[in-house]
Length: 512
Image (cartoon, rainbow, N blue to C red; front, side):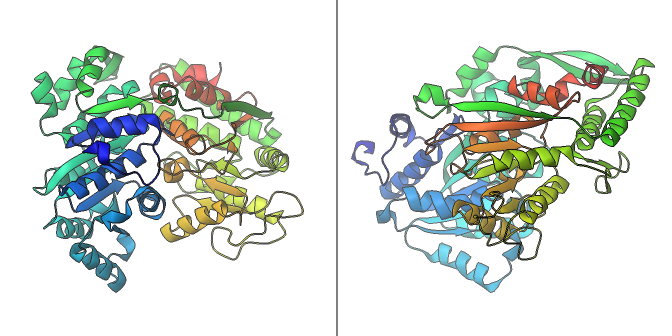
């Protein structure tokens, strides 16, 4: 029957092939590299299975903002008119409003294909669970876990909730999607595959627990931290066997394998010198921590990563009052060379730009600095609105997306940037690093760095995906003779930073 399926938008060959091969399967995952277009065959499958009479409800569980993107962009683009689709985005902060309740009731009574998009966080709340159970109660359901790597931890509430809904009696079809390279992190596949097919590992491998899984696919040693004995991962093993098992219910694909003729990525760095005051603070911390390490102090990964974080913040122009307080920020007095470097780079770029920042303090400062040089000023609130792109400086306006910006304002800011009302989108990779297409940008600047490889891969993939018609340039701002260069080097080499700084490994980072 798939041969008779009529497309709303023409698929690429790899999208057509995967649809033909898997549309009739009830459980499957697409481990496709960011930009390969895994959303389209998922929507096509939902429409196909609806027309066959298999389902009447599509539920998408996704990270924040990404869940909205399904309803506002992807389903209107790829959904079939004959499916009579009615879709709704669940917002936890509006769940008790009359409009929200009426919309949910409308989904429940709708005679065509109903679509509900909800976040991983929302399904962990009482109201979210109640809503999802009500919508699914009398409907055969296709359940999609978008960015399924989000349920990699068995202890996380989102994992427990997602897997529990996966067992709902009305769930007929399950799909998992991710652009994160799971084969580089084998432990991350255990719970996603267990969500897709009950007892997947026991059925195909005889493994009955996550501990047995970790023992099967890794070699371990014991590391001593005083009286504590901590398991240390030495290396992954039997990965070919693991990949063979995964192919039973999943498909991995890179853009190169898909034959996508995307323009190339171009990497550049802009190196600057910290101010003398920054340098003194930075060197004082480095010397203090080296003395501790040389005296025999070994660090577990969390503390080592906190110390890297503190040094990176100093290089960004500010410091926290102490290691325990995550919010008390002291800006370093004097010039801010990183900001000056960013503004200089932006003056040379004529097109729309993405600026990635890790810290809220950075995002706020960047937006304020850009908008201070624009002819139209922000209209109140933490982000700029309705800005004039034709600023005298050529910078245009900036809007912001991070954890401090309300959900509805984030969406408005993204749309303002897409519409050209602001030229620069300042975003946090965690808040906007997955599932969103941002091909309007031809340049992405990393003002401050997220240390997680996953965040780097996902954020690079936002502008470099299907629909991009020009090369994308990635610019890293690097404070000279600091950990900045080491961070970027590790991320470019696809290395996890946390694995390199445990024990005495931090010393090589502090003073190469």
